Length: 224
Image (cartoon, rainbow, N blue to C red; front, side, top):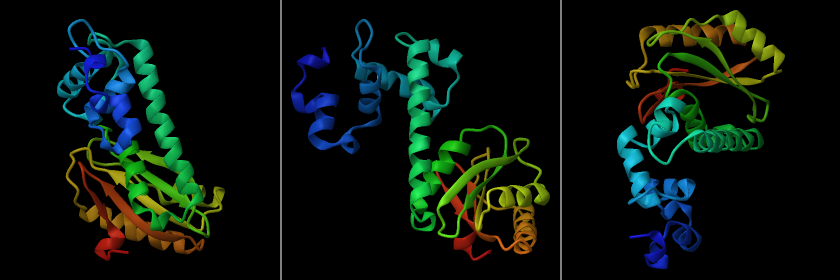
């Protein structure tokens, strides 16, 4: 049955206008992006099939072009549009973080870092550089490593902090395994970096580990 034959309150576009975007399921939001279905399937049917094929929304959003274009109704244009939407979302969050006190917007920080790091199959060490008012100046990925380790050089982090004239830093790295626990090396490196940055009067507000659906905060654990 075509979506146009559904009750107005059940059609994704009309439902969004009536109740807001948060009221829609992942499949309904994806159906709005797809716009049309394929032979014998509505846009919502196709959206549900895509989510099942890739496991979840994250799997779909971060799949390769080759994986994406194998399915009927999809191709280069849709893939480009999807990547543009992802990048717009990240830029919106980054802009918001640059205008607001980042420590009071922990949820936005986690959302931004998760979108940046969680899907990677190798470990990345990143920094959020903050000004004196704890607004975001810049985000940089300073070290890329293997599936379970990245090499961190204090000199490079100090250099970047000085270049950005940062007053504070939040460290972040991902665990590709999805396990959200700090290793002894994580604790040692964080303490080393904290002491090194004290010499240039830069504070370390937190170190966040991005796992699968969860985040570990060194500050909340009392490790800083």
